Length: 413
Image (cartoon, rainbow, N blue to C red; front, side, top):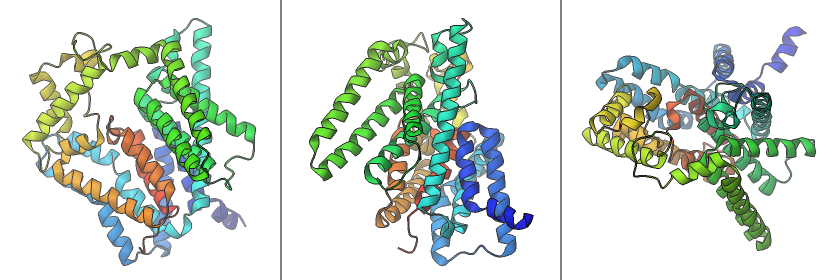
């Protein structure tokens, strides 16, 4: 009786949902849930209920080729310790495709919605608790208003980097908008009040986190979806109202939120070097300039996964970009493609692009907009941030890349 009940509880769908819930809750929890997934996969392999077809093998080779080449780059890297650490943190890129491929027949739209619902609930809960804790500190004069911004907010409850947490919210709001507009038969939450509360909390948190790029990207994604819906229904008034609302909210945030307004002012402030806090526009320009210089030394195969950080920091020192080392910090390439180019050269970028292109093609053939929406958000966000350099966003990409894809896509095509 207990064994039968355990089998009903411990299944692929529930394990996927648990991982989605734990993603916003910190590295310890989502790594633990990942171990449970791997243990369940090994159990199914041992039972002989996991098999692969020819198309499955082709898919696995193409999708994991970039990661496997990253491992091979350790051969010509000097900093082996750092390289092994990066390979370990990016191992989700290998194991999630392998596991999802094994259980592809057990993954569908229902699984996707269940996991997305858990993800949004968890994300909203962490956001609300974080805002509550920081607000309490402000009311009791423990903290200043800056406690409600960026890493001060995102790490108040769980140690989540604010750009990664902003990416979570941007994806959540974008996917929610798509489902609400184009999948009207799907009911994510039974309570309308709960649904509104979740969207409101996530929107406020995204604004407070003050990521210019992700705030703009989310607003643009929502506008594009309303434009598509208005075009299909031939009701342009809806799109115009949404667009004007977004512009008004953006302007209000600029004028009423001094932290966001200050960050927007810094976008065009390229000319000065004396303060890390004042010249982010110029800092990113310096970072990209150095990344390109390092790439030029090994454009075909890159400098290796282990040496990417050392070589980039060496360039900062040579060209005296001292502001990049303020407060003992250094910076990655701040572009996912440039970071891959830096570590593995044009070969690595080619493999990464081919793997995404292969999955996008299959998703389009299967009319899988869940995957198109996800990959669109991630790639656009990745133009200004190296999300593969952090365990949080690395696991997010590997998980939702597979979950979104296998929810509808057909490998037989």
